[in-house]
Length: 250
Image (cartoon, rainbow, N blue to C red; front, side):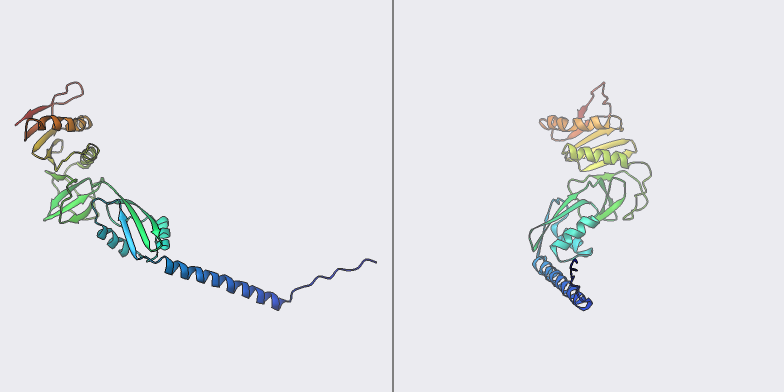
C-alpha cells in the first residue's frame, strides 16, 4: 500500500500577513528611493548653453514660469515627455546633469526671419510671417525690413502685409546666415524691387530673379570693392546666369 504524501498549506491569515509585510517593504523601498531622488537631485544651479540671443537669465526665467520642478531627474523626464521650448525662437531643448544638483540646459535657436520697427519697438517675426517677439533692442544679426506696408502687428498672429513678402525675406535671411553677411536692412521699394544695406554699401538686387545666385556673389563682390572704395552702390539688377553683369558706382 502506497503512503500518502502530506502537503503543508499556509493558513489564510499567515498568507495575508506575509503579503502585508512584502507590501510594506516595497513601500519602504519606494519611499527611501523617492526621498533620495528628491533630496539628492534637488536643483541648486542651472547651466545654460547654446543660446546666442537669449540671455541665460531669460531662459531660466521662462523655464521656471512653465511647470517648474526643482529636481534634475524630474525636469529631464518632463522635458523628454513634453518637448517644451519655453521661448518663441527656441526650436529644441536638451537637459542633462553633470552633478546631481546641477541641471544642464542646451538650447538650439531658430531663425528670426526679420524685424519690423513698430511703435517704438522691434517686432521679430518667424519664417511664416508671424509676429513672435517685441523687444526694446535690435539684434545685430537680424536685418530690419523696411518699405513693407501693414496696418498693425499683433503678437502670435501673421503680419497682414499688403503683398507677399515673406518667402522672399526668408530666402534672403537664410542666405545672409549661410554666407555670414553683415546686412542690417532689407528694403523693398516695391514687392519685387529689393535693396540690401551692408555697412556703407547699398546692394541693389532688383527683382527676385536669380536671387540665390545674386546672394552667392555678394561676399566676393564686397571683398573686391572694399579694397578701393569705402562706400557706394553695388548694382546687380541686370545679373543673369548668361550675363554676369554687376556694376559699382560711388
